[in-house]
Image 1 (cartoon, one colour):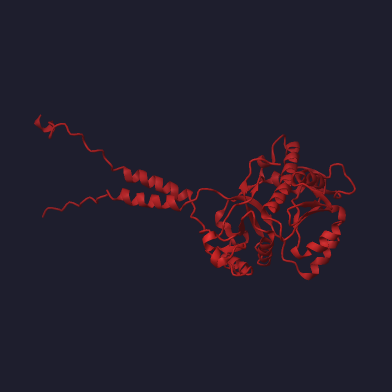
Image 2 (cartoon, rainbow over the protein chains, first blue to last red; image 1 turned 60 degrees about the horizontal axis):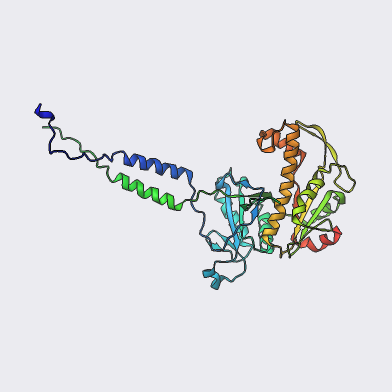
Length: 158
Length: 199
């Protein structure tokens, strides 16, 4: 019976951490599947307008983003305090850049998805419509006719 | 010769690696889904098409103007944005069959059969370059709300108390045919002329 005698007195056995990687991997996969990457760093101040009749943007892969607003404070020296259009990570030099931007984004998409492209307009609520209208005209010219005015939920309807 | 035993791979660093990945994904992600209003822009206009616009009967147009002070004018009448929804609902449905509201037409719609609907109505939304985006979205929102409420009302009546969002896709399409969403955003440069025409 000597075989089964405890060695080394009453020390607690170490907790096995062998299953820890599995647990972490499970968490990892959960987050990998549920998440989307941040689209862009914002160069403009953005407070979205509020509305009640909102629909969710289901397919984010079909959405291309255009941001319009006043440049952030630290960028105002170079870019002024007027509302500007942000495409990807840079300001558009002129409004007509929107057309070529959309065209290049569309070309990068799979062919089946191209007609389904949605242009999501994220516009600061204090922006004047003049800039927005110009962008919309450019989108029309580029045949990017499906647009999406991103807004925040407002609790009370009128 | 004694066969050498294959050594087990040490997996203790696996946890650290996956932790690192996990933290990376935690940091780069944004769970929030976007919400907003869908809209389809009209195709780019050629010069020739402009003539067709004039032929739309005046009773079929609801002219919504928003000026640079975010004030609203509907068919020549100054209005608060809170009243816009009811006005739009009356315009779209024309329940009393008034002669100054859109004319009705008999259209065969699945589930509904031949129905008298205002298929030719157009809500024309025009804004000034100085209008704020918030005011513009508020107006758009009220117009969409008008359509949504009308669609809910007709769904409840037609489909045993089920709301529009509870219907199947075919039923929803039928309701959409009953109340087609017709919001036109006019050419920005037409603003001056069109405003004159509305009065």
